[in-house]
Each structure stands twice: as structure tokens, then as C-alpha cells.
Image: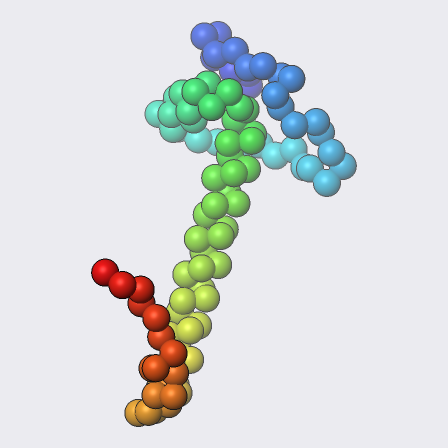
Length: 97
């Protein structure tokens, strides 16, 4: 499956294939493909690079969500005790307004 006829890519901008890269096939709807092609043209990049970046961003968002859930569970299991951080109150500097 190639690019639509009205889409041209500068292959010199595409990353060179590397042994750690795997080629996959995926199915997406026409509306989504048109959006991806519009963005990749504007950014002068490739579908593959765009999709890799989108996947990395989503994986990072998922990791942050899991970290936040784990932190909340930790504080729920062991809440801050009154005065626990009182020693540090004098050290805080919120700047001058």
C-alpha cells in the first residue's frame, strides 16, 4: 500500500533503516490516514517517524499515569503525619509576587 498520489515524501529526511527497527503492517481508517498525511507533510517527515513519535508519547503518558497511581496508593497507605515536614516550612521560598 503506497502513499496517495498527491502526497510526496522527501526520502532523504527518512531515518535510515537500522537492524533494531522492525517493519510492521497496520490498519487505520481513511480519516485518520488523511490526518496523518496532512501532519507529516507539514512537518516534512514520514508516516513511520510520526507514528513512532506518537507511540513513544503515548507510552510515556501511560508510564506517568502508572507512576501517579502508584504514588497515590503509597500516600493512601502511609499518609503524611502532622508535622512530618514542619522542619522544612521555613526553608520554602515561593519567590516574591
